[in-house]
Amino acid sequence: MKLKKVPLHEYHRTHANLVDFHGYEMPLWYDGIVREHLAVRNSVGIFDITHMGRGLVSGPETTQFLNYIFTYDVTEININHAWITSMCDERGIIIDDMMVYNIGEEKYFVVFNCLKIDQDRVWVSKQLETFDAKFTYVSDQTAQFAVQGPQAERTIQKITDMKLNKLDWFEGSCTTIAGCKAYISRTGYTGEDGFEIYIWNTSQANPEKALKIWTAILVAGQEFNIMPCGLGARDSTRIEAGFWLEGNECNGSKVTPQELGLKWVVSLKKPTFIGREALLKQYKKGITIKRIGIRMLEKGIPRRDYDILKNGEKIGQVTSGTFSPILNCGIAMGYVPTKYSIEGSIVEVKIRNKFVTGKIVKFPFYDVTQYGRLRRKKL
Image (tube, rainbow, N blue to C red):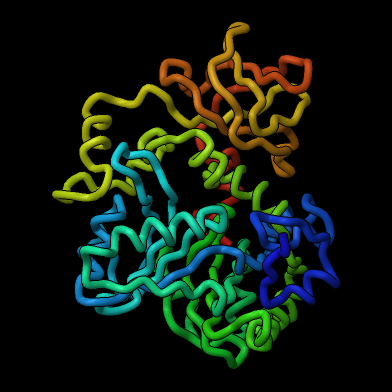
């Protein structure tokens, strides 16, 4: 199968180690996963995340439609703000999780997972049949970058006239970056402060604006030792932050938002949405499984599908695992019965043929006074 290419493919081909990521040829790393990871935690890094799915929803019944397919009440999202939501089936099982932006009267911008692009488009089109609204797929005409880290604001501020310190978390705005029109939001997937940038009317055939902004950000960030970062550092930073990944924590486990720990993306006060009755029933009854974090107490790196054990008995499986560069140990996420999910409890992970001890911890894995976006105002 011929792999899809993002607008900056030639740049990545020259500077990065490329891999097949769900049909896209994407950079895994440039100068090493650990170095890129630490750049994001300690200074600033830039990711090309153009492989994500993107669509515009518009029309007279856009709000009604989105409130029918999404678990979150989109009327709670102010113009030029965003929020995380999920799209469930009638059983309350997550089809996909996504970011939804309110960008104007009856117009929303939705960002969804690369893995689910085709499935999401089919599902949304089917549900649209009874609503006066339109979904326009714009992934192939939009570039998307993430600039993450404690020096992200100072980096981008050099190349835009917008006062970035006025932009709150989950808030976005149209702006100009390096002389090019773009949309910027204070969001991200690493746990750090940072921004996601959307460049319209950009494709592999016309990559000029994307390359100009990417290059300008790298130049602006030289003072802070900025690094281009690949999917490897994106994965390790999001695991440290305790963030879920479609295909790992969502799809493979076939879970509900409440089991995933996303009760806050479900608006049960809405009178109707797909999956509401199932989720309401579960909310009243309580969940039987729960997503947990495990910090390894012994040497060993947990990986996806490794068994989680308690007193020699298998109680679950790892959904995501990695080595944490800032904690200098292995960390993992997985699902266990709720009775085994108590913070501080000792469990084991079967790593190859060894049973390695770990401790159940809360998310994020790191000390929030030392890392993460909440330290932003202290810098």
